[in-house]
Length: 241
Image 1 (cartoon, helix red, strand yellow):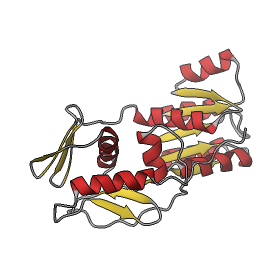
Image 2 (cartoon, rainbow, N blue to C red):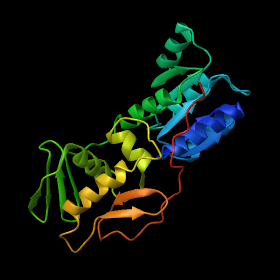
Image 3 (cartoon, rainbow, N blue to C red):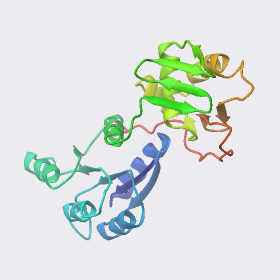
């Protein structure tokens, strides 16, 4: 998923970029309103993080023009303007969320994920090749054979199948399934992937759980050609203090 960060303070923009890329997102940055609008009208973003105090125009004007775009992306305002009136005005003019500076990156990341989940299709039944997962019944089959999975195994497999063909870092898997920060020293993801492979892949000729070297893992069917994974940092970037 691609995020546009509109922020004129380079230190904050760099901090946000490193943190979001570390969480597995593609990030573009715009230092002012005009470049933000150029980006927004030329690229389909999944989310915009918008500062209000920009050097060339008020961020609310940028918000207005983004909202004029058909099927515009969600917008998270991130601003030093913390008064209630400012927050209300931002939300009334079309922002989907509002955070004030200073901020904790972990909270911002949680809000980003919440906004990205809104309006995303979440089918109950997922399929990759002959592997099927029913999220409502918590049932997994492969080639018609029922496969019993532990809750975390099911959570990992569901997350990977919803992102079929997309390389997922260990960071992304841990933070999604365990709802916790990733400790680079732990091998918990690798352990669970081994468990999944023993149940999902080992007895079948076609292997669906792929290792993406330098990144993590993905689920992909034989009908898809191998894709080079985009490299992303393995650890989230935490806000100091």
